[in-house]
Length: 391
Image (cartoon, rainbow, N blue to C red; front, side):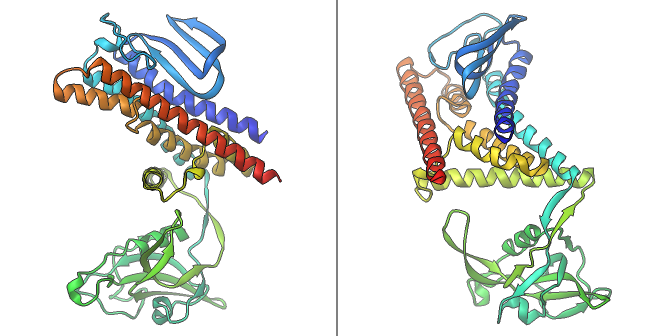
């Protein structure tokens, strides 16, 4: 059942991407000749309104074939009014970028749906406090529930304990609903001017804390200054960032958000996942991520099949991440992808002349070779990982 759900979700992601191209092309007056899910031999097809809708044999993608455009023959031209090649550069860019926009829109809507249904999060409850850390010096204790935080102004650098209801309580606290919120606030602590005597001196933070002792709950604010510490990031690199010396208790709760907060959550997740994927691509190009970590469609389906039984929220979050991934990858300046085609159009617009047929053909051939090579590498790595895991 998980494998079937994964396959359907992947087909839907491809369909939604191509639907973006289809809708934009129709709006711009371009005839859509073929709308296909998958490549290769057409298994099922039906022509409606001059467009052939097809399900093809190889479910590794999909395509929309526009009149006057042929990805395998970039020299093909058609000057008819309903042809892609007769449209203005802006119309072409809108058509090409519509698939990416639709993928991002789908991810955004999925994030809203997840947030509205209730999100399981790691609660910002302190499990342990490191000896000699800023948190210990400030008086943070295991079991403290951190509910808010803010950066203290440079002119208000006194560190200590404030009663939650006192006149000195820091204003404009940022609400903390999860351990991830807390981690992000700490990691984004502003670094002070190095002329103050240290190249790694950070601004002080104020934390609003709920502390339960027996039947009594105390509300107070603790202030501290994060210290730079070594930390291993998602890519296995050792980096230095502000930390306060606490770890999570491990308590999990469900976060219920109204529509406004759900939209904010969706925007934040969309931005976070986009930046993560861009960073991953940069690390891959720089060689930080080895080529044997490159994955393909087989790995995507495998991961989705594993996550599918976990419930709607987990599966929807993964589908949204993959949708963002498809959007980012399609923006890459590879001639076989939307980003490469947009780059060609920008070049022709700026230079006020078309690219030579010889160069255009050579770049397109190079782009397809690179793309197919990456697809083969991804599938090889995926199969190898699955086989290795099975033994």
